Image (cartoon, rainbow, N blue to C red):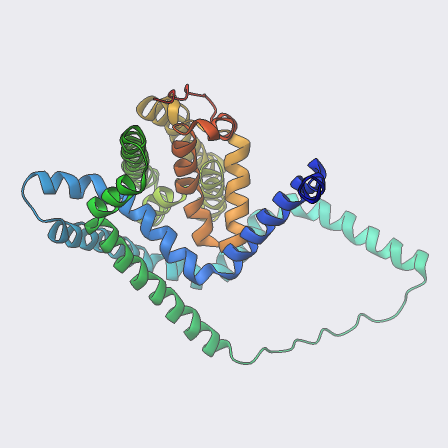
Length: 364
């Protein structure tokens, strides 16, 4: 009787409440444990991306430790080269931001003046109707101490994350076979062992294929945009090529940010409206061609994801982990989608994530 009484306490509402509390606890753990989870997650993503290269090198007789060091060093060299290339023009653009802002305001003056007059009239009417004739209060700015120390702490935190990510990526790449053996050993039946091994390899193949393909496509996109901006006379075309490639890792949002910023700087850079409009028109044409035709054709329907889910993921991980979360959102979503497509109990999740649902393989 006591056992049945305990069971009846778990009503459907109680189960839902427990699940909601569990989700909130996981979100809180991810938020407060950011320093731990970020390098772990980044290392998994990087290891999944580079794993096919290490496996190919192993088939050629190159030890995994040596090939792992080579591919990680090549990746770091590429990132460092890109950052070094854009550092000077980007810092110059940031330093020149006040002048760019003033010039942009001056060129948009004809659009802003009518709205400013209306706003001023509304403000004056509000003062007259409320009887508020007091002089505006002086704004007091409180300078926060310790700005340099906080910046130093941030830099040290970033460096620590990079070092931990590199170390974990190396050990994941060199320990791949051991991890597969451990997974096979803990599976109880032979059919479970085969299925677990097949699922892991298929997920690894899907994730690495997606990330490597997207990286190649975005690199080509950056080359096209940089070359086009150079021919159109846009300042700093190399910077724009690298920025366009990086922003395109953010579906939908990245291209929108690039178009808005490029348009604003084109207004400052060019004297006439037709010249100015060629920059956003070219950017829109290239990103539309890539997003609507090239990428879907190369990757296929299996990698097409629910647009709403993609945007929610970008916002969620951005709020949770900032810029790192925004760039990690898509790999996380791809990993979840790849897992849910191959595990029957998660088929409903896979159906929700995907724009086009592939049939789930039957249990053997």
